Length: 247
Ligand code: SAH
Image (cartoon, rainbow, N blue to C red; front, side):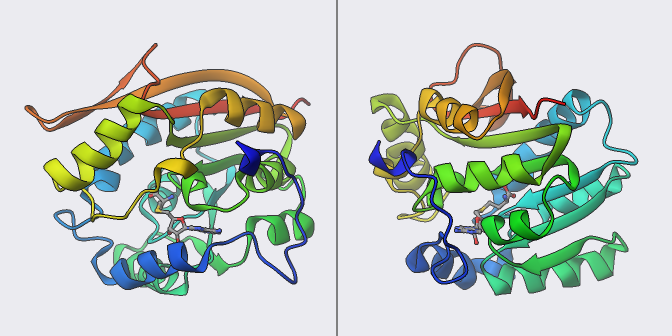
């Protein structure tokens, strides 16, 4: 994938963002915390990924964390509830406003900011024990640049957690045809197949950014039981990778 091959980050002038992608999330922002909305999948997978991150990070309590592409703050808030000091960043301002309001209502403090990953990495390099970037890379023009920014944000010895969608015939069938056209789990046009990222591509971009892979796990959805699960060994559609920045 040519889009994984660059690591340019001339973000001040031209942020690594696709306006059409940002516009999709702007338009839906008001429904972010409605568990029966387009964001239901994010609500349903949140406990799974939260526990996985918490365990691999050796406990989020007392850690500094940054959630890159945080949207309405589903994961950011959950990490703060676990006792982390959390920053959430995104380039869509409406989801960020929703996140801020939700935090006020729930009494969970998260610092939210509209800033590109590359820009905050330049400002706050090595500041975070935990960096998360979930369900976001497949919406970005240059995911390798985002991965490099995540690596830079992590403290030496810190952890970087990334989730995205694999690219193969099965993921096309499940993540696009199944989720958007058959089961109506997501609005049509949410995902673009060409932007899906193979684990090998993600891992080599992370290596080039100085990260080491710790572990990888798949996530599956069973339409009959309507259950999401983390599964060892099946990364064919949704998957999560944990990386470390060497100390
Ligand atoms: N990470 C959150 C939200 C996923 S939805 C979660 O998993 O719960 C994808 C998010 O990525 C949206 O909030 C969208 O605005 C954001 N996004 C898309 N392109 C981006 C970019 N180039 N820079 C920062 N955020 C981006």
